[in-house]
Length: 221
Image: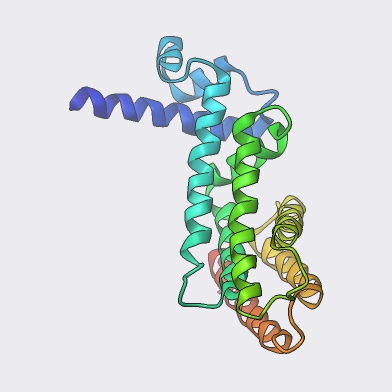
């Protein structure tokens, strides 16, 4: 048991070292030697836990995305309107990406490797599926327009959200502001006319709550 605990601790050191180094110099510039030195372990320890840099990257993407996915799905309760869950879920994910270094590293790696790494491609596909499920429910509930394709809705929301995140690396508050603007643009194009006033109000409440939380986190209050 003690050996297993030490092994897991070493693995975690390597992951944390890689995440920190990727954040400082980027994935391309980060090398095995830098990760080993940052983690304070041997080359043998690296190869014992991760046979290659690719396997290390895959571990970061899978772990980071698992946290992102659980954060999003926890906001999409079947007892609440699906579009509420989608809006609330993306605010929660935006907050997570600003505060959780592993989730943030996973996001950057997905962008960097989407065309060459199968896991990165799979992550994008699973994200689209999650959003399409919510969109399909929202159409059935009468909140999203019935003439829209849920897959296209999911793709549009995901690409817009990731774009706002890439433009909002300076602070969590900036990310919340850009995400709010994104939804302000998308809602009139997607939401049924009768439901639009309610979801504009819902968006306003969510934006205010997350902006207040980010102000507290930044020490403004």
